[in-house]
Image (cartoon, rainbow, N blue to C red; front, side):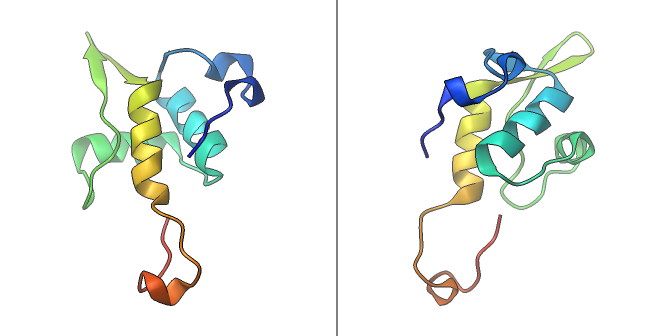
Length: 91
């Protein structure tokens, strides 16, 4: 997955994000909406495969762009030519 920084809004070209910005960044990168509440939920009850890694700075939660990129790559997965190849497509 190639991410073109110049296609992102200026506020999404930083190295780290708060939760709402991380959700917006993931939507720009994957094309799939991610609600801030979904990221918050993954922090306390991770699904199979888990959410993106995050950091705590005092009470603030931050996500680094590189970690969001790795998470997005895992979520998108490898390209397939038919949904039967993977059993079913998922995002």
